[in-house]
Length: 100
Image (cartoon, rainbow, N blue to C red; front, side, top):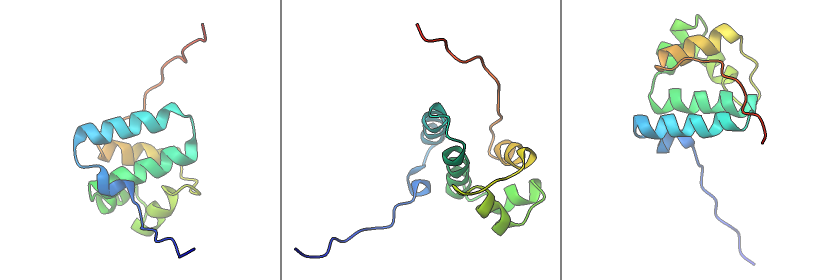
């Protein structure tokens, strides 16, 4: 059996429209997986090419922001909130749907 050829895949390459971005974030946030949510926010920042501006607004270095928004990152809440704001989003609190 021959070698299997794989290719690098980056979600940011496929987030072309505002609808793509909104749908992507909505789906990711349904799973309640903080590590995945942070990575998705990073994907959106990369797709919009706003990491530098987001880092400045959050008062962190660009490399630090990349690390914070990775699956292993542990950013401060303020950092996440600032980045979302820079991307045109905000967090909101809504009641969980009760199981029927």
